[in-house]
Image 1 (cartoon, rainbow, N blue to C red):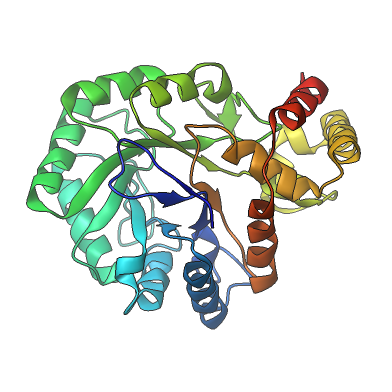
Image 2 (spheres, rainbow, N blue to C red):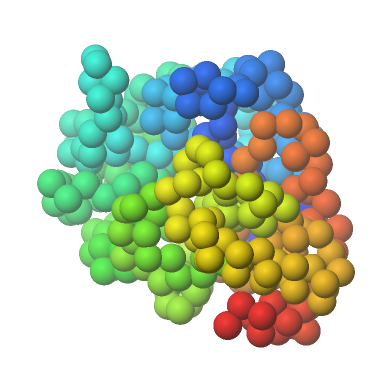
Length: 314
């Protein structure tokens, strides 16, 4: 395994991490199997992956419960990350809520489901427009003082909101949408994003010793060799439909021809080569997919390869 060090993390983090949205349960993922999920988590840890990312809203607590089961006896091997800010009511209606009271309830619920006494990284899942960021960050700072969390992170924050959060307390990381074909995405599933990862955010994070956690690194399968996006959530992504899909498939073909490596490995190495990036939030539903992810670290992308990719994508 390759590891990357960041000033805002107290341990070296594996270049590739494990995302666990797919372990939400059958309501979210039809091919979910708890036994397989636990085997994947164990195999990831055995391979050297030490970063596991989950969230309460994934399956309304189910993903955290599965991760908690899998980490019994292995908790010290993992830099465990979860999120806050999307609680649900008795009717399973999810809302944005980053008030102090809600945060304090959510952390205790997450620790219980994960069967641990602390989280290494606690991330704001999405901004809450109805709560002052000062109240939110002060609450998270208090949890840090209590020892329930070690580091504070944000996700899907505009650069302006990130700056305001950093005025209140230390922020270790930012998680956002980023891959070879979506370098400065303007939206995610129709939700506007107020950051430009490649153009400005990465440089700011590097300056402050923070790290960037890219989700959707394989662009919902396009950068893993998938070509059919006619069903599921992919139909909501304009990059995966019509003429734009054709253009992206042409770009993928050119890149693989020039570099002569599988597109998935190229996509991962393109991310790993960037100083402020890591770990990559990579999900999988099969052990074979985990193995494919890990093949990427068998080689490194050099400057010439990076130039080839950028030349095709510009």
